[in-house]
Length: 313
View (cartoon, rainbow, N blue to C red):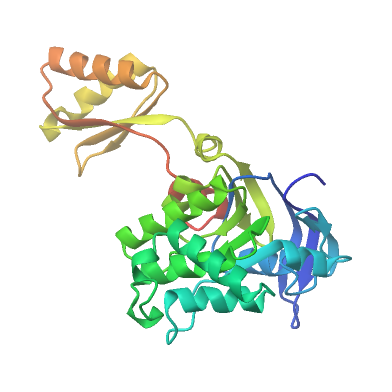
């Protein structure tokens, strides 16, 4: 195994016959963000806990940061950090005091802990708030402080479990920037998230997990391509001309479009995005069919997720 995080055939069964992992395979390359997506109960959290040595798996093999998870758990723990869904900071202490405390708990000397705390406060944009108690921090600031605490020892691999749950859009963007900074510093991030746009923004590669195993893997673009081509969407002004518009579109694209009569909308897959849009609108205008709206639609990770996990059923 040469990946930063690798698993082969992991199996985990809980009491009562519940199978959490059922042949889970994963290979996350070093130096980027690797996303884990899946519905609730798919096995994401169990996989992260097993890889982070927080629980044992029944079968299979795993390596994290070059160490065997089963045979060398203490080495794995020395090379990783884990940040859960909720910020694990002391609200009574100031931001700087929190980081110094984490440094001392990780066996840094007093001066080294203070120096490292100041470095991280600067890196995560918290210097101006370093003297305020964590209770006064916004949700985004707490998450950034939590991420900073995870980086006290500069881990090779950081496990991030739904880092922006409950945050507003501005705070989410701040956390995203902090994650990108971690990756720029050489840390590999394994990210689980319930926000598909978050995975799309951050992850270079994504694994879709369902029923305890990885059912698809690739870059966001590769995963989107699995559910079909880009689509041209048109809305005609006059519902009475919808059938005529469908005939024109079919003649141009060679494909019968999907018709939504209630919305006066046509959808058809295309390969030449801009060329198809321009040619189709022009042809409809030449046919005397006014177009109220026209646009191109690319598949989203939401659609990939629903398609692969059957969550739409």
